[in-house]
Amino acid sequence: MTRPAEVSAVGRVVLKDGTIVDSRGEQRLDVAMENGVVTEVGIELRGDRLVDARGCVVAPGFVDLHAHLREPGKEEAETIETGSRAGAKGGYTALVAMPNTDPPQDSVAVIDFVREQGKRAGLLEVVPSGCITLGRQGEALAPLAELAAAGVRLFTDDGSGVQNELLMRRAMEYARGLGVTLAQHCEVTSLTKGAVMNECQCCTSLGLPGWPSIAEELMVFRDIELARLTGARVHFLHLSTARSVELVRAAKRDGLPITAEVTPHHLSLDDTRLTSFDTVFKVNPPLRSLGDIAALRAGVRDGTIDALATDHAPHPRRDKELSLDQAPPGMLGLETALGVALGVLDVDLVHLVRIMSTQPAAIAGISDRHGRDIEVGAPANVVVFDPDLSWTVSPDSLSSKSRNTPYVGMTLRGKVRHTFFNGVATVLDGDAQR
Ligand code: DOR
Image 1 (cartoon, rainbow, N blue to C red):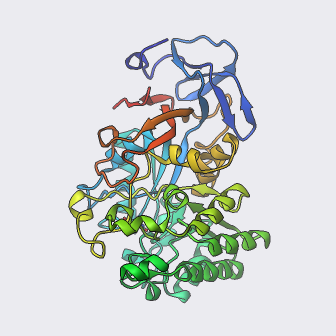
Image 2: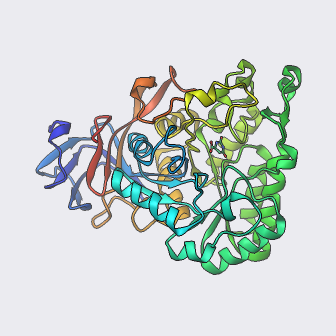
């Protein structure tokens, strides 16, 4: 078998002895890739370079709908290059870059910059989202048509939700006409002022201001009704409560064009973690109750939740060392998503690939090149992962520039072995190639 360093972009690369998992099910076949595309699928294929996939799943590369890459403006926390490397290590071939940069992604110039920096890093496709409102200020619409003409397919003010109903209605009317999707961060801020953790019994006894579930659910409800009125496609970011899942389930039953995501941390960690006062557990929306976690997992299982999205939110140590009320919310996600998901979700591998690749690619509007079945002619955006390999997360192993993850020291089951972006290995045997 070829050593990692010997696998190059040229020639025919064959993934040997793995199991293809995609929308068609599972097949034990080799996969040949050349010049950026899948060129053959079959048994006992030969090639210039052979890459071991024994015991592994070979699937379309993962697509993250929710990554904070922090460039431009907060390069101390992450750059598009370091975030891309973290993504490749996590098996991703595309990341939707969130717009809360400085300056924010509300102009074609910033969108072009983000996309170009992604190309320069060359480790995966960076897909910039655009702001819904100018400067994410919630006061006037961003130039949606201009941004859509520049290729933006997903619009969001993430980090904040659009509070004003009229503005959101107008945004949906434009979005409908432009054929783009609005992704909402659901938080009614009049209900969350000063809040740091889920409103629950322990927050009261700790004397910490509570963040009620209703702050999320009111906006989920409002936007479902606005989507019903306008016909716009709406995607709900990082849902965290049982009632939100129920609202989305009912909206889908009504045939509305609604999609939703959950994060690995909301599926795996409950609100009692914050009793440690450790800011690594501070996220927006906050970690919720065990009942909410069970409902989120059930929502994934029955298809109410379309996508697993990381909300990868790097922050410098200095910021996370502030007191609980001052520290920014967010934790890393890209390098641990697969292991966390496999550990907590009771779904088969076909379903896992659906929520980590196929469906997020469709929501991001990039299904022509990501999330595609592994078949001849498909772009060679491929992840190879061992679903049974246990590994312990160590700070030294992380490619992100930041270290704010609660999973350090934890043992996860399921690890990415190789990632190929347009046929080029970005990760081999777990190591980033550039
Ligand atoms: O925890 C979070 N961190 N949630 C968000 O919505 C924003 C993000 C960030 O930008 O740090």
